[in-house]
Image 1 (tube, rainbow, N blue to C red):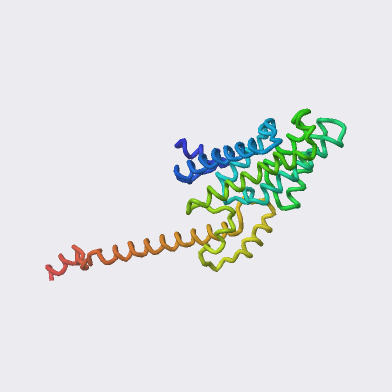
Image 2 (image 1 turned 90 degrees about the vertical axis):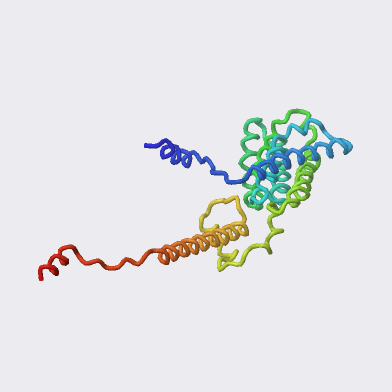
Length: 260
């Protein structure tokens, strides 16, 4: 049995993604993330009262990865980035201040931040890291208390969103936020409302917007129709070029004809 027949099911089981993006798109993500983080760091250092320790926030880098590597994803849009970080920071600070045990505060901050982001429609996984940082960041972070929400949490989030707007929209293959391309979707019998109902029927969070799903469906239908047309064209050419074979009499019938 060839090795790829074994590796392919194993890759699907492990969730190894078949990434089809070009090298140019990958490098745009790398450059954009680097520039976005550099811009946020520089801006924070220029403002009075900037806290250098705040740049230990791992969640800032995670948000940069989403905004620049997956700019069309539902988790990468401005409201999830802004709301996810600020709401989670509020929950993290509150848990650190009012819950007795340090370990219990971290556990509670994780669950409560996910619940809040879900119900406020701003699910952003790096926000959980922000909540944990507010709990476990040490005395210097604890002293900031709720001012942590403004600087650096909201400042970082706003800077990354602004950088995403400036960078991603320079390239025709990217749009940020994804609703900017709403009018560019190809016409299709599939409506956005149909996709939204299908997503509700799945009852699972999918990191893609209904607009992109509709656009993907339309594009796939276009390629399928083109493939059918190409196949029909090749088939018609074969039929035209196939020589017309004249019916030849069977050898036995020839002998019988000569005998007669």
